[in-house]
Image (cartoon, rainbow, N blue to C red):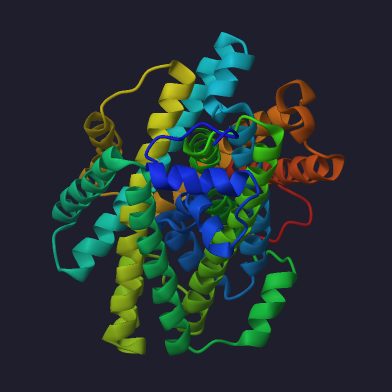
Amino acid sequence: MDNFNVGQGLTERTALAIGEVLAGRRTSGRARLLFVGPAVIASIAYMDPGNFATNLQAGARYGYALLWVVLGANIVAMLFQALSAKLGIVTNRNLAEMCREQFPLPLVYAMWGISEIAAMATDLAEFLGGAIGLSLLFQLPLIVGMVITGLVTYSILMAERRGFRPVELIIGGLVAAIALSYLVELFIVHVAWGAAVHGLFVPQLPTRDALTVAVGMFGATVMPHAIYLHSGLMQNRVPARTDAARRRLVRFSNLEVIVALALAGLVNMAMVVMASGAFHAGHADVGEIETAYHTLTPLLGAAAAGVFLVALLASGVSSSVVGTMAGQMIMQGFAGFRIPVWLRRIATMVPAFVVVALGVNATDALVYSQVVLSFALPVPMIALLIFTCRRDIMGPFVNSWPVSVAAILGAVAILVLNAILLLQTFGVSIPKLPAAG
């Protein structure tokens, strides 16, 4: 055990096994499972109710045409989650802490404010999604579903007192439930696989309004709080003390990121494919989760509708847990203090209750919350890129030039999408952009 410090929540037996792996004395696949967890937790951010809302609208309105957005966003997500994990492993700091240490105080507070707004938008989507699923599945008033969702997520958060493994196992189980649900859906709905493959690899924007949905899909896929969270999950889990140990951890982390986010990407694609196959031909106006549920029953049967709600409920509960964890980490990193989990849970529930009390359409709130996230996303992306490109911070783990170029292109793509959406919102004509429709 000379290569690392034991992370919080590790049993002595697990710590010894991890030490053997990091020292190169154990190389079996089973031993490497000891490192699985952080990317699985981060991946739930890519399958949250915001994804359900944007992917539902994308598939129902535009068929398979926006599948390429899911693929592109997933590739960008893999890159930045891997960089976030690497930052935590190498520096033993999370991204928010690094910002507080390296940037001027006014900039730190501005970044904190933007990140908190993003955290609230995130929790709005996740909390509302879980509540919608619960209320529809058990025929409950939405307010009652919101209260139950809040209690369930708080109970799961309390499991973290016993270490990170119980939370990882719970989140992993919920991720499996979401993936299995959409696998079942694909066997129920009719899919035009040729058109789906074309939509996956041929970029297109059928109408101007498709841009809003596309930006929302990016915001729902590449999540600001997940970028912050992943670095924090790695800093405390198995802190490494030598470059050899860090190199092994980075390698294990990259593999987990690829597998976990590939699964998340396939789930997102399945969401679009299901919505396209079920609604695009004849029900393209289906853009709300509640309407989708009630339309699925006569189209594909009660089983399809029930599976859809189970996936939504699992997504809402698990992503709400992860969102609260990320919010705590963001606050502690930027401001240097924490608040009790129950207080943060209540505070982040308030916007959702306000939305419902004002009579705002829940699915519209989900979609627009994802657009807000897309505008907040460049903040952690640019900060992460700055830190991982600095040799004085990363040492031998500094980004190679191909990685840096790819990350810059990903950040620029999101900035350009946001700029186009902003111009469109204020009525500025954009050449070669399709007319509204």
